[in-house]
Length: 275
Image (cartoon, rainbow, N blue to C red; front, side, top):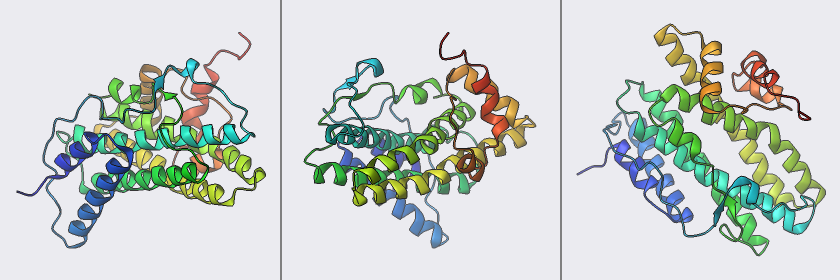
């Protein structure tokens, strides 16, 4: 019996090992694409995805304040940066497949699934690119502790598709657009062109993920006659207070369909750093 897309997504979420999870993600994304190209799309179906995805035994997950800080310019600091990115990318694989599986009760065009399957596929590639660079530096994903709060946004928005789109692609992934150029410079200064190349691939493709979030957020707002900017502000205040902090990569955010009046008013509400 053929799997539905929701069942495929659920299977990825229930696979613990990072390399195995991303291999399955690539496999199912290719199946989805091939069937779409042939004009015989896989049925969306339904699933009951886990509230938390399966995870490998390592890394140890710590509160953000307990994750050790290392000097970014040092060899150990650069390994820590790559480890943190790998952790983010693995969570992103699950976040996108969870978006596919969790909201099938909401009537969405097939293009919605095209976009998030593609995003999950690209995040899988990103995870493996970064793991390959870690291994080239005699490290591996799981070697260092990681942030325990990465999945919190998914749990908080498990029953709110618009909240999910607002917080995950339009806040968390948009933040990646802000910080990745600085990380690229660190590895340029370290004369590590292989890592620079990997980060540049990630940087280019993450713009698309933020754009998908903005596109489908605006689609749902338009369908319901809601003002997108006001709704975005309300949802971020509800689910992710303090989630938009400058400096912002305004050029890439604009390229992704996020104008400044979406995020600057939220930043302006934050107390000053010295308060």
